[in-house]
Length: 422
Image (cartoon, rainbow, N blue to C red; front, side, top):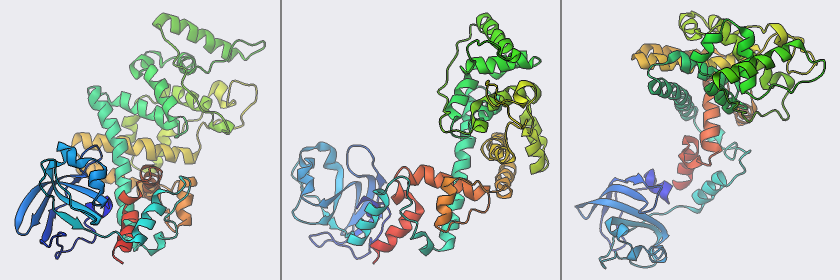
């Protein structure tokens, strides 16, 4: 009922109150998600007289009394009671009658709404219905979602920069750390970077061993002393103990997620990559701005590991054959989740509208992400042709499907509109 009213579905020009007065809805008001009437600041015309106030919605008119609204002064501002079944008249706390309007919500629409919002989180309840939506509606919604997702990331960076008085290098470093978590360990990486500010690390960037010791020590990943351990492990443990004592560092011990994770996806090599990246490419935001092509941008992040981490993926003796810390596909994910939001935020900060638009266009040149979310929508017929679309799909899944906000999704809105108009 709220959905029908909010989106003016089925509201006609010839509507009348239950006592026969003409009704014209000028403004349906703003949905209230807290206590009080369902819609604030509505505007309606009843028999030519203009009313401004709030709207209350019930399935049955008698729910007004069942909910105790007749004794609550909060509801004295209600100018129209919208119901599906008029089983009695209602009054305010002072005894004055409230006009009532009947709107119908078809059983098909109610069933569709329940089907969309009551499904299991791992499913896609609209899968079989998406093919019935005209392509122009799909394209329009996916475009809006892709922009929505990018602006969320860009705004997070801008908020950090503003909070830290224009500290772009620090914002880039913190964003890089978060991005290296690749979703699974984003929070632990962010926590780790927060415990080691960039200006502190830059004082040690000429000593890679010291940087690695700081990162692994603060990450809580240094193993306890063991017989015949690699000299490198002994060295960075001693380094960290010395530096922690000198600078009063406290190990943050982030909650790393390692269960059911492939060795190459464990945080160790990515932490080593972050340490080496800071030592050799601390000002990478300038490198990104100077990049002329996507390949140039990829080169900014394409650094092989050196030393111990060139042949290990943890501190254990088991050896890794490749010196690459992250794959080509992972580098593209860094472009999507780090480089492009960073450059977009930078352009917005400068007021460069054309620059911000050209940054967004880069997403259309990057291959699409392939994961369980994009594959789920591919089965429903949504063609995932580039990173712009895959980001839109992920935003749709995370912010609408998983949060059961189907009636606020344009796909769900379209489906329900069709049912209501039957």
